[in-house]
Amino acid sequence: MARTYATSEAVIIISTIFPAMGIVVVFLRFYTRIKLGSMLWIDDWLTIPALFFELVLAALLIWGGATKSLGDLLPPPSVPGPDGYLFSTSPRQIRLQQIQYFADIAAILAFGFTKLSILFFYRKIFCSAGISKTVFDVITWVVIVLVVAWTTAFGFGAIFLCGVHPTNAWAPVAVVSEKCSAQLKLLEGYAISDFIMDVIIWLLPIPKILALNMSLRKRIAVVGVFLVGLIATAASATRMGIYITYIVNAFAQSDGETLITYLMFWTMIECGLGVVVVCLPTLRPLQRIISMDSIVSQIRGKLSLKSLPRRSSQDSGSIGLYNFGQSVNSTSTQSKAHYNTYSGSGNAYSAEAIRSARASDWSKPGIHVKHEIEQY
Image 1 (cartoon, rainbow, N blue to C red):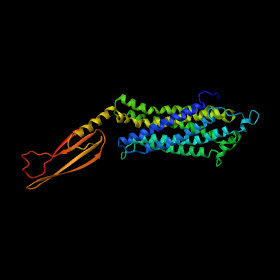
Image 2 (cartoon, one colour; image 1 turned 180 degrees about the horizontal axis):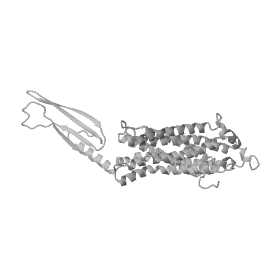
Image 3 (cartoon, rainbow, N blue to C red; image 1 turned 90 degrees about the vertical axis):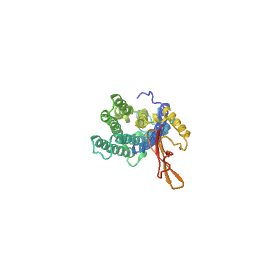
Image 4 (cartoon, rainbow, N blue to C red; image 1 turned 180 degrees about the vertical axis):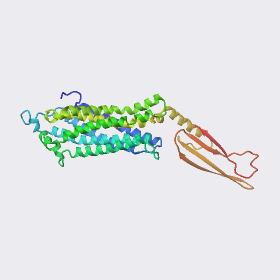
């Protein structure tokens, strides 16, 4: 394989940028949910293990790039002859094989949690509790079961790639080909099935979106948000192409380090894009939260509240209720006020009950209350 873009420096760069982006979008996802008062659901929590295993993958690749184990040619074989590379090894080669072994495990788990997150997000939007089962409801459950089975099968397959002796995975190539003979078939099947599942998952909500009662322009915009996921699928397709093209005779190549570097390079891109893309649909309300109109509205609301007598300033989304009770006897009138608040969502409202009575009515015993509602 000819060496082109997957240098040690490039490996370090993508292994730094994508995890940083992942941390930002996952943080903003939780911030948006909490700020809007929305309940955190399983699709939100699944992004945390997905991000964690992305960080593990990135750390392994940075280690490989910094030590020139990834993105650079290994030292010449210590055993002479054209097949000497099969029986020789070096510290850099051992690191390279260790990185590949643990990176495959981390990537499979990251992909699995990412797929589950987007599937449960679909269910939260399109499947309502208490309503009879729909075709989409059944399909999403079937795909969820398949993803769990896929993650479990390939996860254990990667862990026990060389049986109960994982150290064989970073032995000389001749030992790997003998003791870890299932490696090539496992990785090829993993890459192909990963691509197929990505295509199915990202196209799954399109019919539901097109059936929504909204303008064509809005439906196209919503579809576009979900189709951004196909960018991550493109990285998956590239990685699958490398497997199919070169994996058949991988052990017969003396520059296997180049093949591994390309695979790790595109695995990092796919993993990083997956975590980012799975969070994008949930960040749309963030625009309303941080918009200048919202900020100005909140400031004006608070200033207006402070300018009114006997009114307690509340945050946006709070409602203050003043309940006035009045007891009247023959000689005097007393009043008591009780204050309660609760949080809501949507526009900011300030509600207060204002006690007033006409002078002509004070002579009559009873409770006199006037309610006034003001909106900001």
